[in-house]
Image (cartoon, rainbow, N blue to C red; front, top):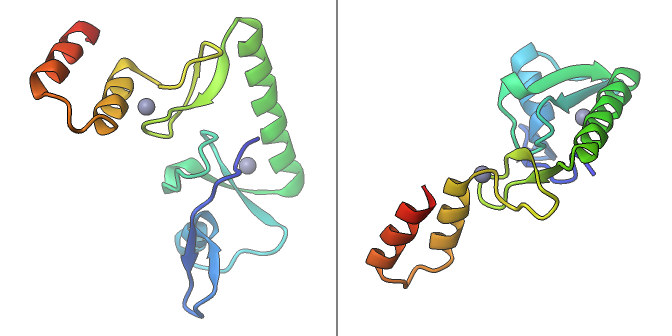
Length: 130
Ligand SMILES: [Zn+2]
Ligand SMILES: [Zn+2]
């Protein structure tokens, strides 16, 4: 369930390659080998900041995802679930039905999807929810 969505980028040969691999190659100053994988540390496969990318091999990569799953199960046992925020794509832990990482994100998403609403009403809504 992790790293389904990825960004792609055109390389110098005009070929589309995964952006996180491209960024790692730029960072290392060399091409990646077929045996090398780039893992997203925070679990968000769209977050291609170099701080979030980790070079590893296949067996290491499996371990990372295994521990990821263990963490998810741990939180499940505490009544918490791993979600991706509908507004900012951040991975967060929350209730089973929670869709946003924070009240701010919920409000932003709500406002973006109700652009014609009166500003006064939105301000009131924000005040109540902050
Ligand atoms: Zn990974
Ligand atoms: Zn968010």
